[in-house]
Image (cartoon, rainbow, N blue to C red; front, top):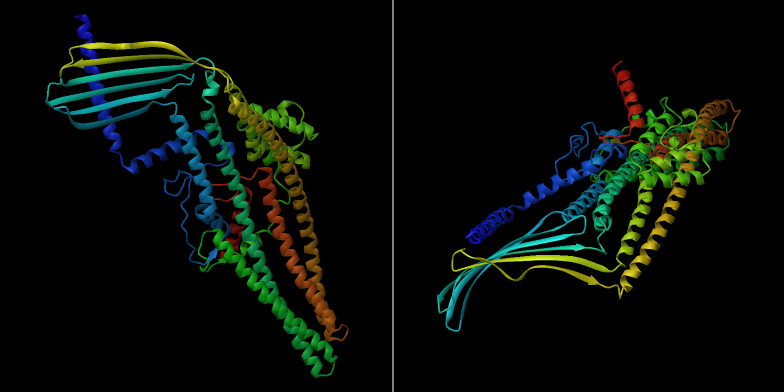
Length: 607
C-alpha cells in the first residue's frame, strides 16, 4: 500500500511537471523577437557594467545605435549649427555619435559581450522539449496517439554533466484488439569525468577566456576612442591649417598685385627697367596659381573631413578659425607630468593583474630604468614628479597603455591553453550513473514499476592509444605561447619607440614654433622695409619680391609649426595613455584650454 501510494504520487508529479513544463515552453515560444532583443540588450549591459573599470576610461558612448543610451551619453544631432560654423567640440561630438568606424567598434564590443553571454549559458540549465501526434493503421488495428517530452541538461564547474528527460505518451485504440493507455518515463543520467576534463580550470577554460576577451575588447574600445579623438582633432587642425594657407596665399597675391601696380607706375615714369616689371608680373601670376591650388586643397580636405564626421560631402559649413587662434593662447608647452603620474598610479592599482604586473616589472628592468622598490611601480615615485624624463614617460606608458595590458594577459591565456592541451592527452575515465522510472497504466496511474536495468552505475574508459590530433594541438599551444611572449616583447619595444618619437616630435615642434615666430616677425619687417626702400630707389623689385616670398613662406611655416605642436601634444598624451576622453568626445586638457579661450573671446566680443 505504501509503495502504491508513493508510486501514484510520483507519477502524478511527473505528469504535472510535463504540463507545467509545456506551459512554460508555450510562453517562451510565444515571446516576440523584440522580447529576445530586449533581453539580450539588458544582459549585455550588465556584462559591460561588470567588466568596465574606471581606469579604462569614462563609461560613455559605448552603446550601439539601436539600444537605449547610457546615462552618461550626450545626444548629438547630425546637423550643422545655424551659424554655419562648426567648432572643434561640436565636430568631435558629431564624429563620436555618428562616425561609421566608431559605430563598428561599439558593435564589436556588443558582439563580444554576446559571446560571453553564450559562454555563461553553457553552465546554466538548458531546457529542451517537444511533442508529436500521429494516426496509425496496420494489421486491422487503428489508433491515434500523442507523445510529449521535456528535459534539461546542465554542465557543472567540476565537469559533471546532468541530463534529465520526462516523457509522456498516450495511445487510444480506435479498432482492433490492442491495448491503449498512458505511459510516462523519467530518465536521468549523470556523467562525472575522473581523469581528463575533471579539473575545474580545464572545464571553465572557455568561460574564462570569454570573460577575459570581454575585458580585452573594452580595453581596445577605450584605446580606439583615444586614437579616434586625436585623429578627428588632428584632421580638424589640418583643415584649418590649409584654410590659413589659403588666406595667406590670397594675401600674398594681393600684396604682389600692389607691388606690380607700383612697379608699373615706376616703369611708366622710366624709373626702373622693364624686366623688373616683368618679374613683378611673373610673381603675381605664380601667386594666383598658388592661391587656386591652395583653395582646391582646402576644399578637398574639408570634404574628406565631412566623411569622417559621417556628414554628406555636399553640405556646406566652415570650421571655427578661433580654434586655431586658441592655439596661440598661453598654455602648457610641456605635458602635465603630475597628472600623468597620478593616472599611472590608478591604472597600476586597478587594471593590471598580478601576472601582467610581474611581466611589466621584468620589462622595466630590461629598460634599465630605476624603478626602485615594487611599491614604486604601483605609483610611488622616487623623484620629483615635475622632473620626469623621457625614460619616466616610457615607464608610465608601459603601465597605462591598454593594448600592452592585453598583450600581457594574452601570454597568461597562452599558458592556460597549454594546460588544456596537455589535459587532452590524458586517458578519459568517466563515472556514469543513470536511472529510468516508467509508469504504465490503462488510462490510470495505479502502478509505477522500474524497467529492467533502470538503475545503473558504471565506468567509461577511453585509453590514449591514438592522440595524434591532441599531440598536434599541444605542440601548437606551446608554439602559440612562444609567439605571444615574442609579441609582448615587440609591443613593449614598439611603445618605447612611439614614446621616444612622440617626445622628440613634441620637443621639435615646440622649438620650431619659437623659431618660426621669430622668423615671421623678421619677414614682416623685411617686407615692409624693402617696399619703402623701393620707393626711394634704394632697393630693386627683386628685393621686394624676395622679401614678400619669404613673408609668405614664414606665415605658412608658422602655422605649420603651431598645428604640428598641437598635434604633437595630443599624440604624446595618446601614446603615453594619459589622454582621457569625456562623454562629449573632448579630452580633458584641450577642452579646458579651449573653454577658457572661448569664455575670454566671448567676453571680448561683449566688450
